[in-house]
Image 1 (tube, one colour):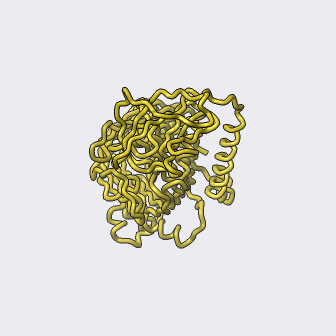
Image 2 (image 1 turned 60 degrees about the horizontal axis):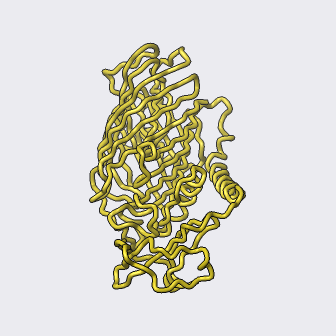
Image 3 (image 1 turned 60 degrees about the vertical axis):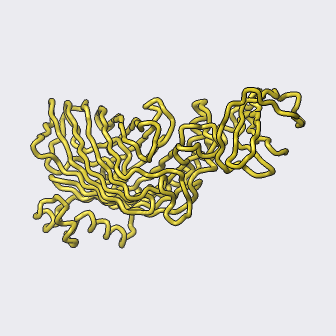
Length: 441
């Protein structure tokens, strides 16, 4: 291999440029290549290479190279074994994680109900593929039956959710009826979740972070949560263990999906933020807006206020907002299709009457304001000396609107979110779609 060569996959896709045996890690600036010709091309593949210059890049020090990405080489005619192998590896890893996460469900009572919900955020719904580009989440919440038996952790989460009133501050802000706290008549739900988030720049072809664009970043998190609720409010507390960097498998997930859809791969994942384990604790509260009375049948409107506080080594933030639904036969549950730290589906607060009709159709809309003190994807991992090249915006606003449909125990929701800039000099206004599919058991 000679300096300036590139490594190409079996499909003819060239990912990384090599210079004297090392990958290009410094930023480069592309300049016009008109009139630039290589003096000599000497490789074993000369017969297959078009020597016309297609790109000139200048490194930060005084050196210039003319690169030929060999794009005229036709892809090899390979079968689907490579895709099948990748799919099998991803499936095995996913199954292992799900077994570890949800294997305790068998210990629950057979008649215990709950919600199994899958979430998907993707900016392709907005016609782009950049910045916050994808998020997936799978969650299970049981109604009254513990899903994990880490007793000290579970008991502390129950207290933080305001279940027994031991913490005066929690009791003061819980929103619960005082009698419900004192006689311990609050309903407790327990949840498990698996979440993956993915961030990329706009330029997919650069092997390093393009100047002024977002750093490659991925995060994978496993959450254990407790939810306390009465007819006024629901308090959710989640303890989340996760990892940034290659261990999040964001690159593999994106490559797998792009290959299936025949979309160009992003080539700079080696320039992502490094591996680091993260631990976060999140508290979220939703309160019913009392003057909006939901009716079990016919047209009605309901709504919720919500606020969230999160402290951790992945994100530290505070958020306030509101969420409203208007439609026919509104479901007797709270279902938010957006991916958040405490995104779960709950049976509606205690005093609601469920519709006798098997269907629902409604519009939903809302807004939120988030103050962000720390974000590992923009500030860099907390315990690593790593510069992402981005400067985080301290305040971010969201506007979202969408719709929901229910047929018996299955519910589908779609929401589109328009978000303000998340880092300084962000070139494009973020917007993405969120899909949630819920099955009530």
